[in-house]
Length: 242
Ligand SMILES: Nc1ncnc2c1ncn2[C@@H]1O[C@H](COP(=O)(O)OP(=O)(O)OP(=O)(O)O)[C@@H](O)[C@H]1O
Image (cartoon, rainbow, N blue to C red; front, side):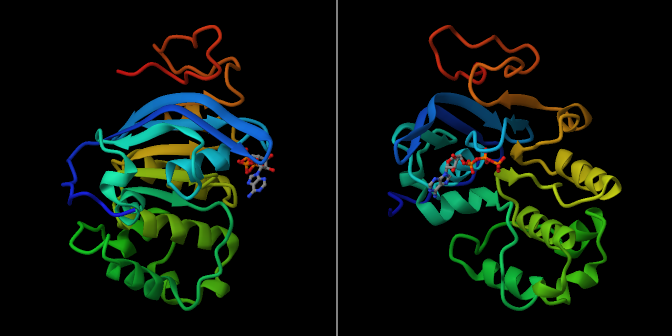
C-alpha cells in the first residue's frame, strides 16, 4: 500500500475506529465497533480470554485485515499514511516474547534504520528503561538471557523510545511483580501517546485512570465516565465521539 503523499505528523492525533467488523473464519469477533482515542488518552480493553482483544489490537495496527468499517489517524486512513508509517505511529507491543537475535541495543538500532523511523523524534532509551525499573545494562545483554519480565519491559521501552502516537499494549504488566507493574503504569500514564491497553487486572484502570471498553460489546461498565451508554441494537458503540 503506497502512501499517496507524505503526511506530516501532527502534534496531537486522534485514532478513529468506525464500525469495525472482523471475522476469523466463521467466527465473527467484532461487529460495528466504533471509538476514538486522542494523544495522551488511555482506553483499557477488558474481557474474557478469546473474546478478541488481541485481534482488535492487530486490526488497529493493520497487522490483520478488517472485513469492513474504517480506521483513521488524524482523519487519514492507513492507505494515505502507508503501512510502514502507520505502524510506526500506531505501534503494537506483542504479548508474546519475540525471539529477536542479538541484544536490545542492536534491535533498537535496526529499527531506527527503517525508512518509516528515520528523521522521527526519539526518546532516550536508557532513561526510559530505567524509568521502567531496569538497569540500562540490560540493553546490551542477549535477548535470550533476559527474564520474561525484563524482556517485556525492554520491548515496551523500545516502543516508547520510538515515540508512536498510539501504543497498542497487550497485557504489558502480565509478567511483572506489583512494584515493577507500578513503575510501568507510571511511565505509561505520562508518555503522551494514546494507549489502547489490554488488561486482565481489574484494578488497573482505577489505578492508572482512563476509559474502559468491556468486551463482548454491551457488557456493563463499557462506557467510561461521562460517556453515554451504547444505543440499543448497536452491537458496540464503545463511547461517543467528542
Ligand atoms: N490466526 C488465527 N486463526 C484462527 N483463529 C484465531 C486466530 N487469531 C485469533 N483467533 C481466534 O479469535 C478469537 C479471539 O482471539 P484473541 O487472541 O483476540 O483473544 P483474546 O481476547 O486476546 O484472548 P486472551 O485474553 O486469552 O489473550 C479466539 O477465538 C481465537 O481462537
